[in-house]
Length: 358
Image (cartoon, rainbow, N blue to C red; front, side):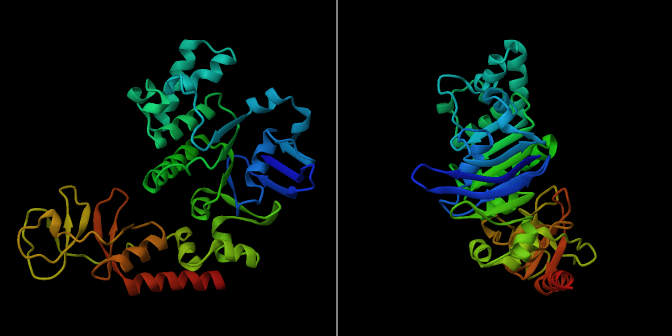
């Protein structure tokens, strides 16, 4: 656990970047610090590993006051991932990851073998391992940065806007990959982001800070969306909170799913009207109302797809985005099961809302 007790950062000119901040980052969980520019997010993060000295207060790692630890002793316990990865440009990805273990006395061969395992764990292969940072995409560099931070197996991990420098598609992929990795490694993580949607997606708990480093609210993502603590938090979260909160509500709609006529790509529909185009494995590709043999360009791909035991937001979005008003539903393996109507998805969401209100 990382604990902050009345932590403050005051600069010589009297500016207070962080004011009386107290919070706990639970063991094995991901705590996200989010807020507008100037709220002290990165300052707080850097005070944890003492890159910035705190002016007053106390920071503890599992009950140990960090002021009692030497800088090297403290930072060996904490992995650190920054924006743009911050890799050594003259070293390959493999040697970037192996650098610190070797510096700390590990044998080169074992350190490089462990580094290769870490690179594979974050989704890179041997061909990536022997490339220099300039030969890797931004997303690949960030993966190397995560692997390097984990190279000494630190119990704590700090992440400063690690995915902000990549495009939206790659960012979503990195977020999903990191969530998968965190389920495996269970590190105690404090992460900074300016993106509230990223905070809601990744965080086990989210600390919303306001200017001057004041804590506005500390809560789970679902609690933030359903019960903002004050007007500042509500305004920072923005609109669509009710719809966004549905992503944290589970829904098993197997009893509600309706069968649909399906057609394979290249085949002709059996009857007039909308049919679901599926591939040879039974995964839905979209809808079509074409009469002839189905070509790729005949498929309407505007609708999203929901998993039968997934979240309510995905279910309602699948129905609302469908050209037919019937959302496509698949099982855990991606095989098409049937559809759910807008009305049915709305009724499920309404029952969930009544349960919250009660």
